[in-house]
Length: 153
Image (cartoon, rainbow, N blue to C red; front, side, top):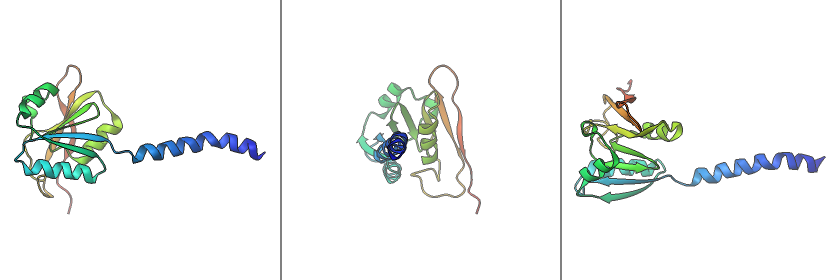
């Protein structure tokens, strides 16, 4: 009877162990930023603190990187990051990155246009209010992926 129990439980134990091993491997992220920008570094530091393996690359030609990745000009932000098959344009919050990687919608990436006060890397402003846009993989207009609204005090 013990042998049967062991045989029945072994696959479950292996799956549990594999899940733990996979969870400890950080997701790699490459951040392309202006060499003189401090907010980009703060954003990358927050991603590192969240467990991502971040490679920061100073790039004088950010426009070329953004064009190659297909970022719409009206949604451009400060820096751009690439994580797995997605791009993250500007000060995309951690919650949006996590949701993107969990849900894996058919998008090229996420974007936070401009440099909104209180966004990740732009200081702590409890009144921060901005939208995170998703850029579809195929045709279609960008849409609001997540709304960031003032925190209740």
